[in-house]
Amino acid sequence: MTSHILLAACRQEELAFETRDTPSHGAFTVALVEALSTQSLANLSYEQLAELLMLPSLETRQHPQCEGINKNRVLFNASELIDRSHSFKVTKRKEDGRLVLDAGGIHGIVEGTKFRVAVERSDAASEHNALLSSIMFASTGVQALQSFLVPNLPTTLPHELRDFRATVTDWNTLLVTVRFLGPAGSYHSTLTSSGHSDISVQCGEGDMLQIRRHDPLTTKYHKARALEVSNGHLSRILDGISRFNVHLYRRNPHTPTKGHFDVQLHQVDAKADTGLRPVLTPVGEDFFGNATEDVICSEESSLQIDTVKHAVVTNMDVYYGLTLINTSDNDLFPYVFYFDPNDCSVQVGRTIPLLFSL
Image (cartoon, rainbow, N blue to C red; front, top):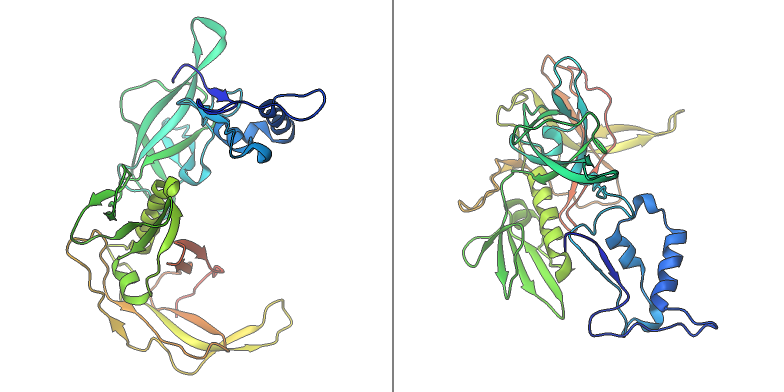
């Protein structure tokens, strides 16, 4: 339904029950009033509200429902609840009117990444109503930390955008291939029934699914274990793994630091200091040494990687640290990220303010 959002006390085949209080009230109504009086309505969508309306005493007999194409809108508001992890701030440059997106290559933006901007337009039929519409954009002029947005179709932008944030609708990056070992539905990633796949999905018990990764780095360095997820979350999980892979396998084709930058792995000696942190001094051999390995990548995979440095450490009772050596003419500002293949999370290590040339 497109004209309205339906909040119903129960499913079509169920009955809506009353509470045992005196006087009695509808169980759904009691839960609804409680949720509305305790939640922040400015950050609550209709769909999220329905999820809060759980009826413990009737959980097997009555299931509140939320229907409507706009159920992700904020309560009593025409705006849609924005997913901040997929949306970025937009500013209009005064000198030329170009739209500048506060995200670039570091965030995974590429040329042609597609965005949607929700704008509010007045309803000509009623001065008290507002209509929510969307304008589609694509990124161009992508830099490390910012990009420009251009509309897909000629349009006149309103003077004020609702939230002035652009939400990604298509990252325009390489899709991972997924092989389904059992019945499959329709998901965002490419589906393959045989041959190579970056991910395989297998039916588990009940509505649970088992996801296994077969990308080059995971296959070589990580003991594969299945990630169990609910069938209802599969599409979101696949998108998350795809984003993880995009950042894990990203590389600069121009290799500006090649031959001028090195990474070493040492055991570190921690000495007390007057500051808040101890002084860490590299000692002993470089565990990386000259050990580099080629990682075999399937020709059918969209994920490719060059040689990688690797090290094997067995003593887990000491501390280890990375030594970054810069022999170029430029000061570098490195970040170290930890990619966890167990849950596809990415953590950023403590940043290094400045790495001076040696």
